[in-house]
Length: 128
Image (cartoon, rainbow, N blue to C red):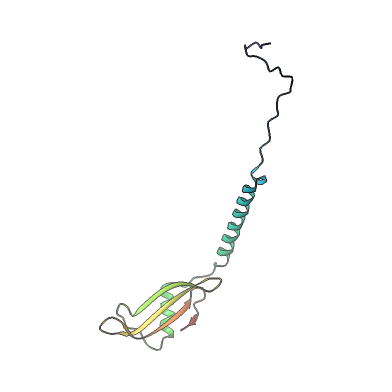
């Protein structure tokens, strides 16, 4: 038997096979893992950003706070004021480490110095 187009007809007597439905991404194990990972990353991002909405203390402000707490006036030479920003604690908090030197020797090393830890959120000196 042939059709008008000249191609033979399927003559096995069975109805045509129904196409199999594809499983959605949510129904696959890899899809579920990906969705869980996306939700966890979004939750982490929200948790990290919501806690840090306050005013941050700048490097210059941390230096001024440390100078006001020092028992001496630091010299004006390069190397008399040293700062570094570090993360400390659990959960981590940004802290400015401010080192002040009263004077430097002939090799450029501080003679009398003190270090201050200034909390970058509150401006409080946590340790000197």
